[in-house]
Amino acid sequence: MPGESAKISVRDSKVHVWLGGNQHGQRHDDIIVNILREELGLSSEEIVVHKGDTDELGEGVGTWGAAGPP
Image (cartoon, rainbow, N blue to C red; front, top):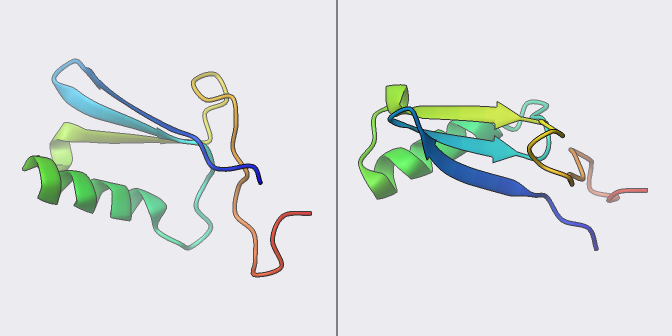
């Protein structure tokens, strides 16, 4: 099965996170920010989430329903 890709890096005193897909109401970026805040003790201002950036990530399955991807 294909999976979603992600990447994390520290640049310019901020933690940057790249997610392979875009959210469509699931609040993926909010969840990622909350995990980083809780686990690393960061503030929201120290976290930058990039979504669906194919220049940074080569794969992403996107958002789909219970039937799964085609």
